Image (cartoon, rainbow, N blue to C red; front, side):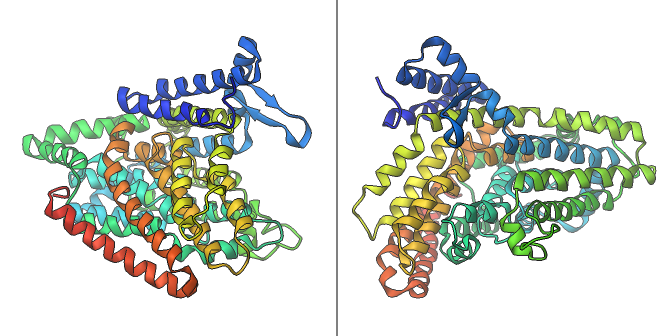
Length: 532
């Protein structure tokens, strides 16, 4: 029986997601999906039990330039993946250092004087999420570590914080011209074409990203939430009703456990600068690392061209460079000022690694599951279905759905970009208004699917950044994402129908429809009690 390139290839990720939602246990669910994918592959290839073990752990299919590697060991050996893991360890170390020095506590005290309400804390989270647009991984963990003590002070649930982080990570990065996402997406375009220029042209039509941010503003300012989120909000507020002291101590212990720093060993001489300085160093370091990896400082054509260097950058290498520089400078900054001693600084390396182990384990399993679905040809199968449709005007909406489903099933936006964007570029000729709209729909759908997928790396890191259970985050943010996705889907139908009016006119009509649909949807949800 052949499972490769058929609808069966979608079963492993579907099984993993269903099990995760039923059992509320992610590790075993992902592993079951991985094993199922390896079983399907060895049956199709006729390799038997030995082939199953090989494909599960370390398998190479093809020869030369066409060789493809699959399995757990290959995922761990991949340079890009290793870079992301190293970045997470260094970022965990940076968080441990700032907590050890008391920077987080000092920032919390400072914010307590300026942020006066739960709405203010959520708006601060939103603004910080929008400002950190370099990379979604960096966004998730940095915003979480900074805003967690502030939102806790105003009794904002960890689940609400995770939703705010997740909704301002990928959605912001995918509409930022200077980001690792822009660099990756532009690289998927055809040779000889200015991919970054094409990316910038597609930004106004990325309805899901913009609508997600707008919907956050509506929800936060109106103080209304869906029922799945309200129960966590009420739980956080009940801590205040029951006993402030007990809840503060219990939550602080949980906070300390996540970074490996005990309550008694928190620094007392830290200042706000001990938190702000590492973040500034991290932002500057990551920007420098990204353009360095893109050849900005090397002799040649890209030397001196910031945009070109960013477009050619290696995000994995750039983030490691930036986080390493920030960590080294932070250690020197804290030790020379005698805020902490050198021994404590070195212990934060271990504490940072320990804090990131759960997220790193889920990431490795998610990458391995993706490699299993790749070996089964799941992405190619879905892409072929899309190419076979004859509904020309509805293609942006179709692409949005296909990209969303593919990213949801595989847990990755970038893999979806790599499959669908080249198809969109090839199918629609230069000058066709649907070309830009369809590329935007592909990016928006991929971000949407990535946003709601429980095996998505950004969803996982949003949970880690907020310090909440991963399954709680996935289930509580789903109604928000589905609402925005429905509005975006309808807007892409309008964009496809009005594309003959020209790109500008079609864009204006689509935005008018989308904003109107959002206002009507909010009124209906409010009237029916869904948002309360």
